[in-house]
Image 1 (cartoon, rainbow, N blue to C red):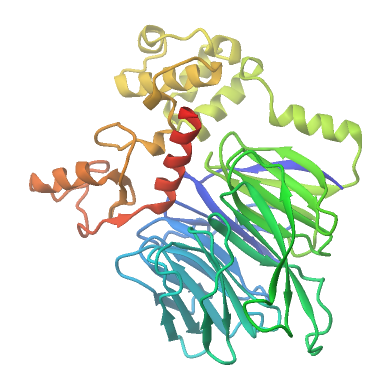
Image 2: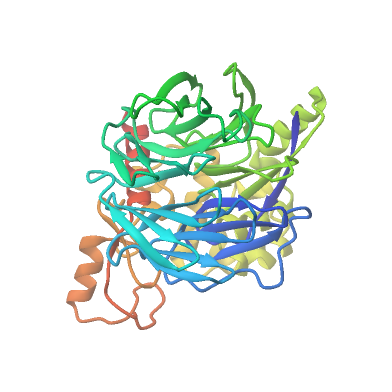
Length: 473
């Protein structure tokens, strides 16, 4: 099948996750919001964005019926919408992932401290909490379609299986490399009443692969999970994967900025799509099988419509996704200023001076100041750095880093990034030095901070580590 592009903006920071119900499509971001769209027209609904969060939102997921939506947040809470409840997993660690049981009576949350919490949705109470992965962040969780078992995966690469009926944990893990996602095929299994049934399950990881497993229900744990095949092709860690409606395909997204569509059983690559300018963070098929959505660190959600494949369509999409910036129109330069640079206040000046892609390439700091009226030095430097990046010039190591990898205070690449109450991520030493001066205000908003709590931002830390590795190898 072929896919065409629709791009959704609006988020002001990285888009971390997305999810479909039959009616709605929801995205979440480090900008502390959820955005809600129609799942058929992709128009944003009047009550969107939802701004009830104090910290970034890492993960969202609809239940099977589409009537409940859960989110996992950096303040250690999982919010359950209609709105039903707020489940407090941790006061000091981020909640990284959440997953519904097939019956939608249970919710599992995974935290940066490696713990796993199980919640009863009807009673809105915690059933139990386990130190599931004591040495690693929990990034992945999925119930078997029968809800008898739970699989969880961590940053250390182990997949652990939990017997929900016996309330037992099986410590024997499956060695991998940083498990980022676990998902079950919706069609592979036989009847849920068949005692000899098997499930097809996929996991993605930081070893650049998607691994396909057979989960044999009748086998004793941990031998029930057997490697079926490994899908190789991505040029960087794989952040997320999802099965198509009929289970015939699986989509995966990666640090390498691409989306790959695989045949689930043969493992062959059917398509490679380029729709993001930086790391792709999550992927989700729509409930009707007509759309595929991907989110990225470029603050953009790309919706791909599945249609009949033609060679010309493939070429058109590749051209649209990879158009050279020198060929941008004035309007496209304005979109770049608004969506990528967050400097929409200068769009009118650029348009009044007919700054298209070709003219953009010739801009200097002096022209920006004298001809376009951009007075703040920081804004001029930001634009010049971005133009150099578009040109692919060799610039300093810190200048090549995405802005979100730099501490807002020191403007250096962070080594110990922490999330503060204002929603911004700082280098721990820098923000602690700020607090030590006695300031009670945010260094970014100049507004009073509700508290001085600092949460480790493991997602940004991992991204920075990958960035540094890519520049030094």
